Image (cartoon, rainbow, N blue to C red; front, top):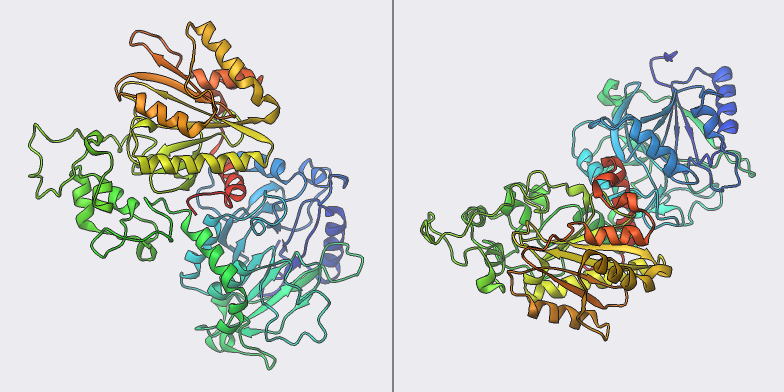
Length: 607
């Protein structure tokens, strides 16, 4: 729809809660009486808050009703959100870096994740989703979403509109709240991360919902910027208190304004509410969340900021991403050393542990060099260890083709990732960072970390009333170790041993019980002590900790997917025994990863 004036005319709306008929009836009325308007931006929860509320969205998606003007929403959570948005994402799988909304139906667009786009000449930046950890675990924004906005904040140009669901913490600091509605100073519904983003992005308008009240703050100045920011908080659609839930603005795009217009300050302009003195209130929580959000997405050898940094030319631990691939997405912001000399040594097959820590506990079992190579002279043609296969191994983080979006957590020696083609939701893998054929050959330090990951997964799934079954298939020339971790309902935990034993007999062998006392730690120790590094074997750790072992003969045709096939039978889903039948889109994988990370964060041993 064409604008009737030189400046775009935009409607703003608070939490919809699925009341689409009420909203669009009001928009239609306003558009006829004072319009036309170019677009509607909805903040706060867009989907219904109760399963008892009628599904009004289907009327628009199915064509029984029409959305009156282009409408964009960010509150991608609530009843039915996952189902509707997952279907929409599948219809538009190849959008690349487009951030102007995923179309649900004509004139209705979901602003997914975070991004920046142009709306009638206005520069719009948005953060979709709610604060992670608030209520329902689904629908939270991700660390990638936040970090993308931090990068956008460094780009040139003034942002006209910043759209978020929740209010920034402390936004009312320094403002006159004598006539503000009750609840404005209440910290609930506020997010310190959004406050930090607002201070960095410095938008001309910041629009948010979730608190259920209308609040138009006085303009405030920005540090190191000439323009002011106006914050607008919007109430809920159809609220009983008749708080304003729809509001109109008509801002001229900053790109079309003169310097004098940009520098203009109304008489009631205040200082920024996000000055250092105001940020102290939220510093502890904000700093913790910033570390959580920013650091977990960079796939480094060591992500813990609590460990003593050593190794590298400057005394810091080495950045695994830079050392292995020559690239690190954090650049100068990385807390680990980008040592070019170490990278040269790594390319010459020098052990990363040796470069990073000055030692390698694998000793003679390690296939890589434990001395500094000068122009390749440390190894002769005969003694040089075989080249690693990281460049083609899909489990090696240094491989160009590795699917990093599946990674859930990364520690010193292991990382945890969502399984490709998962048997069940939250089917994960525990994978050594080093290119190692099995977990039994890893160092004692790595084994201890593996134990911590297993304990964390056990607790995480226990909260979901599930137990975990672990298994590993070790064979000669294994490409890269991965310990499968598959959650099952607690009600089926007692049947795991019986079904594995039955499947073994039908296949022609019997399991040996390593630890009748069910102590999984002792069972792992016994398993490692008995493994010669050459034989093939399959073992499974039952929910109670008992380990069942089968040593596979050289001529034995052992089913490659044995563990998965057995559990698929236990769970009565035989069609999912083959992972290739369970592939999902990258969009779905990313949604699954985000959901897992949110719940696992408090248990993650790598934090």
